[in-house]
Image (tube, rainbow, N blue to C red; front, side, top):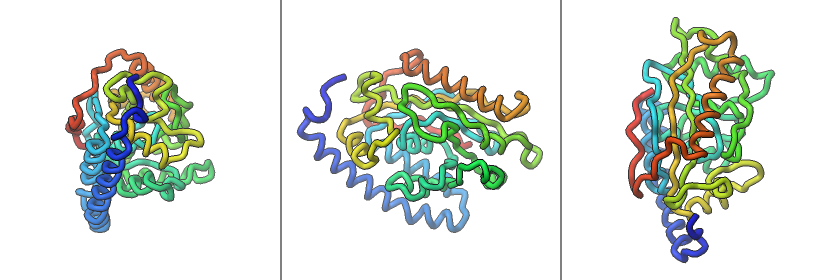
Length: 284
């Protein structure tokens, strides 16, 4: 890669200005979103998309999108997970809410983004499986689409962690006579500073292990533009498989192939020009 931000004496001032603009943008969006959520307005599903597209523009994150989201009613979107930035990328592309572990609600920055996006916070314990599934089905029945990270934690971006299948139980039974589609998505950060990212570079965007959140985010602001490749695969349904475990495994295989191809540069495209907006998303 080219020289890092330490060689650019303007990086820190630019990052500080970007951080200030992010704070202003976030504070401006919280009151209308809170009001829309309190009124149970359908617009509360749209505003998070607008907010996260604004975040993408401010931090110089360009989303290169391939494929389309399922559009015939509510769906369960399933994605690999490498960073809190995944929240920004996916909600810039989808009218959908995240299924997140309960402790995320208390995290700085990430918790705020999750609440603004109307995330469903759950206790990821086997003893709570039935309650988790019921909560997800209520959201789906209300017409909301959900985004699930089956790895249950973030990886280093160079591989997938094993998918956990319990929450796939939400699609085992039809909802109001309709089988809920499950759509796999692969998400890979491919370029930084307009150059392809190597295995060594990827931790600058991915967030896992014991990495401190705020210093990591400051590093992202300092390093300049980046590109995320987002690919949608054909939806699947439980009726095509003998169990939720088989469905989860099929999603894992599909996403793993997509991640591997993106990391190898197969089918990738050059990063967009700075300031290019993500491709328009179709409503889920």
